[in-house]
Image 1 (cartoon, one colour):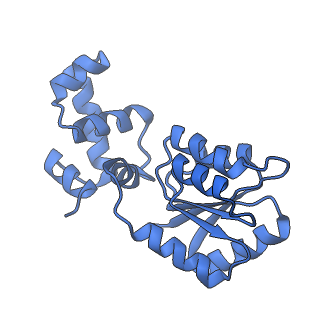
Image 2 (spheres, helix red, strand yellow):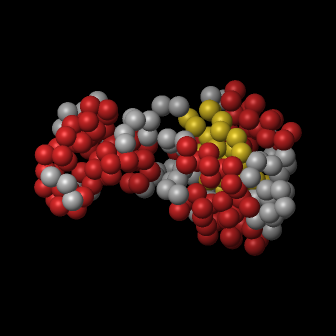
Image 3 (cartoon, helix red, strand yellow):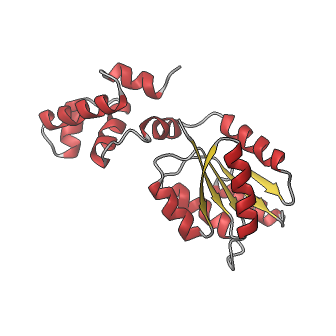
Length: 197
């Protein structure tokens, strides 16, 4: 699986330098210079491994902090690293309260950032993260993703049919396509695919 990384940095030189370093380390960088560009990129990416964002984005001195809440609301569960030249206690509190995994103070060496990325990426994830990761890139339609998520919550086809206002047969057809796209052949295999332990 590709390690997609969303890099949000408004300074073109810093962005280019970070992108070059991260690409050398095997990350597929999706770059953005603003909150709006970052949200658009996140919506288009099937799965993000990690997000690295500056706190100050253009004239918005808390853009990176604001971005955290917006990404979480958009369903992005990847760890988020905030980078800032001003590690004021207020920014640290706000960033961590919004859901940042780490705050890295500028200036930093590339090796420091890479170490932080490895650490936050290795931390245990919640169930939503595991489901997002397993379903990402499989080419599932919105309906198929919704059905897969309901199956993973333990609902039967009949229960999903009632909930989705569809026939049991229609749900089973969608489920067959989900299995095909994920390379599994049963609910048990689907669970093992998502939760491999």
